[in-house]
Length: 155
Length: 225
Image (cartoon, rainbow over all chains, first blue to last red; front, side, top):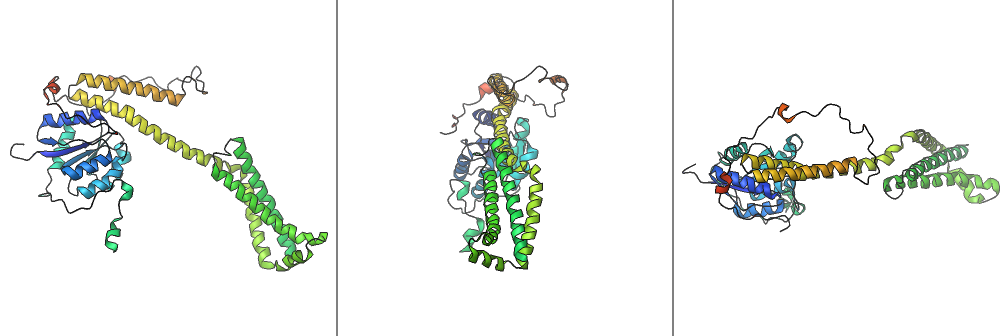
């Protein structure tokens, strides 16, 4: 990875062990800058807005705001960022819904960490050139407060 | 002539609705759902009020025979033309049909219970995910990183959580559900782990002990902090 900027990764998971182990794996693999991690969906949105990571690893079941609630908000603050759902739930049940809400990939927990690192590298080095975040509005605290897209253009 | 038809049909409707209401009410009482099933209770109540309403039409038209409310009763008889007779006849047919379906009223009683079951299953799924799947995933990740201590701790925690959840499902120590001899008989013997093909065996890419060489990770923020 010499000569290339490190991929900036945000881990959002309420399980401290998972966060710690994935962080260790990424740091050992090299080529990643692991940002301060989030313990719930709301924290993930806040940190994503602050740090603009290249890749977000997002858990599905979390307190305060779950992964599916957070996805549309993350897409608002990070239109070009890559979001990988990393969940304990069966992908057959939730993958489609997650992709529909803005995730780029869905990975079941417990698989190979090497494969996960490979996927992060693959998705995090997109063909899309420089990531220029669009001007954005204030991030609402919860999904319920998001204005419908058409509402902003109505007036 | 039409007022007699409407009086008769309204009587049929009132009796059917009364029967439907009574059947639902008895079901609610028998299953102890009078307080917990508002939909069932409201259905019984609406049929009861409709029974009173249709019954009152018939009574109103018959009262002049007893010398009571002659003016109002006769006026009502006059108002009941063929169209009302036809509508009330259709209504009576539907009422009899609904009453004949009383064997299926159980759906009104089990519907909310089924909904509660779904919510309970969702709660159990989240619990299994949080306590078991996350624990086993942690163990696998830790093994891949050579972190045996974390793998062992996570496995033990997942095992304890599994026992607790299974205990809840089969009924705990003080459960009213009694387990008798033979209730735990399996269809087939447990398959040894070595005999199960593993789709993706985690590869220990990092030698044991490598974790110790990693720079300390900033302390994770725990939920609620």
